[in-house]
Image (cartoon, rainbow, N blue to C red; front, side, top):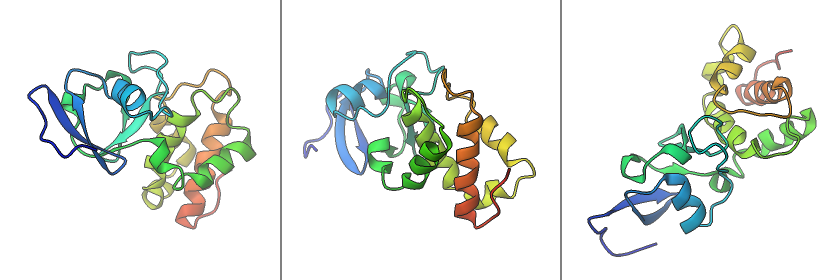
Length: 167
């Protein structure tokens, strides 16, 4: 945390509820990982194609590896801050075998957390598995084949909404 005002080349961010100053020219992922030691967001492709670096910016899933700090508007939440909120998602991922190597799991969980915050709305959709697959399509997993991930997220959404778990 810093009590000083940002310099011309810096931007003030709120990361996991904490005010930080960061160089405007850097990517959000580099600031999170290198400066703040928040390493759950993984940098894999570096082009915003795989989703391993997903964080929430103002509640929306955002690829941090291609997001310039200067463009960040709203609070940033990383998996470290969402750990308690995603306990049921982590448990369901484990029970469903929704991860193998685990590299993509942080990004999947962050994105799923954003969906789970809208569980009541999403569970009302006719094709919940289709909606979940569509919404998570920016998060690539090279190990599992997505069925278990989709099933795990659907199960948690249904439970949070008090609905029947879809098959």
